[in-house]
Amino acid sequence: MWGKLVSSVFAERMKLFVALNWLFFCFIVLGAFLADTGFVNVVEVPFERKPLDVEGSLDYFSRFLFTFVFNLFLSGFLLLTVTGVIFFPLSFGFLLFRGFLWGVLLYNLDVSAFLAVLPTVVLEGEAYVFAALAGLLLGLSWLKPKWVYGDEQLSRGDSFRRAVGECKELYLMVIILLLVAAAVETATIAVTGF
Image 1 (cartoon, rainbow, N blue to C red):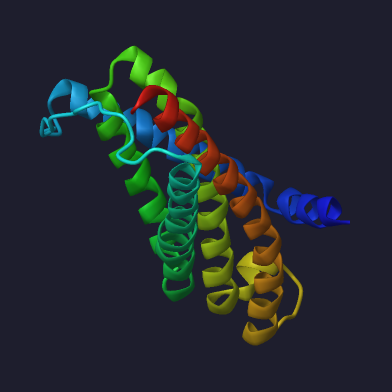
Image 2: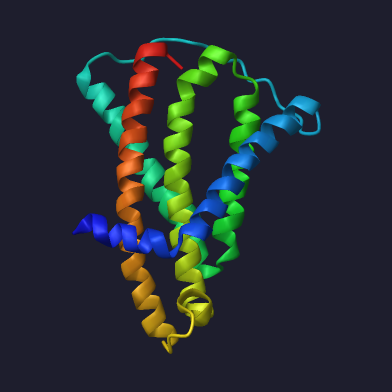
């Protein structure tokens, strides 16, 4: 049942999802390119590799939990979704800005470090695209219901309530992707020290 719900919401918004994905990952490449050409000044931060400060499975679990909660609530929900409810272009703008910053940050990594963090970047990036899509839907649903639901004659309130239902389904994907990303990031840090 859940798969049908998510797939129906996803199918209705496929073009927007693909466009957001394409732009987000292009902005990562753009950020790295501009950092490489010197157009964006990259401050060299001394990167010291060291093992985890405290050993033990609880510490890995704490790191995993902190990463997941931080990425879900602050990075995903507050930055990308809530801002879209307030003013829908902010979700889009913050998503692209995040991609650009990631590109600038990834520019200085050597190949082994880049390959180590790449799975986390892809998983978190996909989750943030879903969160931004939710913000765009919520923001547009109360501002211009016809843009979201076409010829259906929905009031702003009905349109917003329907969008909240769709966004619940989108946020299931956000949660799953961020859980996997937090696990991958924690494992990457534990194994490589990055």
